[in-house]
Length: 255
Ligand SMILES: NC(=O)c1ccc[n+]([C@@H]2O[C@H](COP(=O)([O-])OP(=O)(O)OC[C@H]3O[C@@H](n4cnc5c(N)ncnc54)[C@H](O)[C@@H]3O)[C@@H](O)[C@H]2O)c1
Image (cartoon, rainbow, N blue to C red; front, side, top):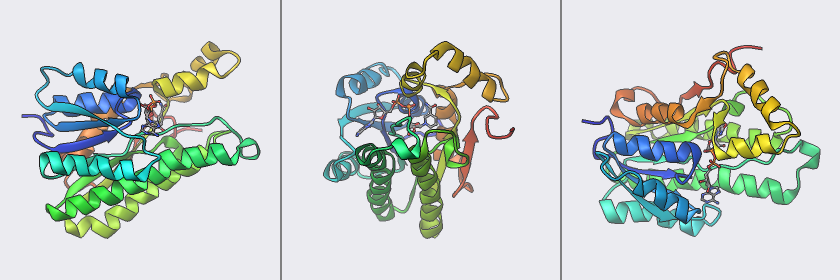
């Protein structure tokens, strides 16, 4: 028995990085998981690679900037499986920009994917969950929900927003059987992280510096985040709501 046996779940941003690891972990834990992403080929590959897992996975193409498509993603889960148990708003992007260099277009893009799509995924997911007696949400926030890093003003704002959105949902819907939590990863080896390092003059030196920021002396792996999401999504975490689980290898516990 997996800890997510028969849980109908949606993971956004499931085609790559942390999201793909969450899709794999959920399927290994027996969930029926829908991988939602704008990158169709990669998303279908993530799902195809899961042949033989105890759970099942399918792909749903969605551009989260379009709220009609966000609604269609949640409707698809309910229409196909009769309910939605777990929502994981995970998709996100990052512009490495200081406040005064951030354009309106960059701000809007990051807000649309990181914040607005998360808000409306949660809204429609909660509507569906209320009809079937409850469910739970685990969002991918960041250690940058808690502390700031230079040159990431808009990103930090979205991630702090996601963390407090989870606390708001936990507050408003806890008595109706809905839990809402987030994970706050440190530096994780993913394509998003690769893009960040490759934008720097000496990517290898920057990676070594990033390793050293963590008390454990290394960056994390996507699977290490996925296992925490899986715990929070499961009944093992039945008394955990409104929490921000720090999964940062000790990055934020030291100066
Ligand atoms: N990698 C890290 O170090 C790190 C640290 C803390 C938090 N996070 C957060 O983890 C989450 C996943 O990041 P990752 O590192 O796996 O990144 P990633 O770039 O590997 O994956 C992000 C996924 O989101 C999808 N996506 C982006 N825009 C989309 C849109 N408009 N519609 C649908 N899908 C869209 C992408 O296609 C991609 O599959 C993000 O929210 C990120 O902010 C990452």
